[in-house]
Image (cartoon, rainbow, N blue to C red; front, side, top):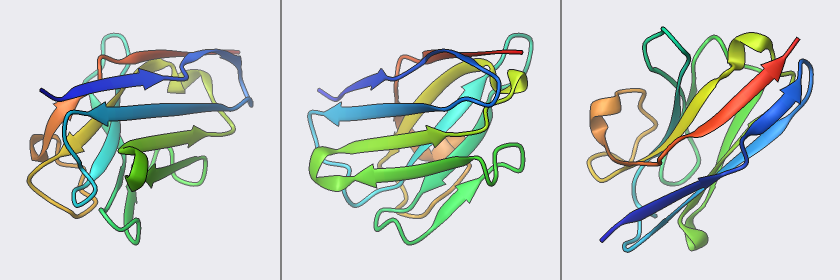
Length: 125
């Protein structure tokens, strides 16, 4: 049984940084894509970052490009999201995602099979 555990959310002032981590257990995802999405209150879920199995390709939503960096550690079955220059509009619940259908960095949520429980990120102005 696959289990996914997120950590790293919290409250930060605008301009600050946070690093989210997400580890999967129960099987390996080293050959597949990983990603992060977020959902703010009253808004649709937005896929913000994805990384290919080999880390040679990434995807970023325009809203986070240049501020967020996704990375992974295949040996630890873990994906990270480094968030810098945070803005109040980055406030949301962040979810990590693991795919079993593609090894490419994709923003298509339907290509991801396992999701984290979500971690709250709140950016104060």
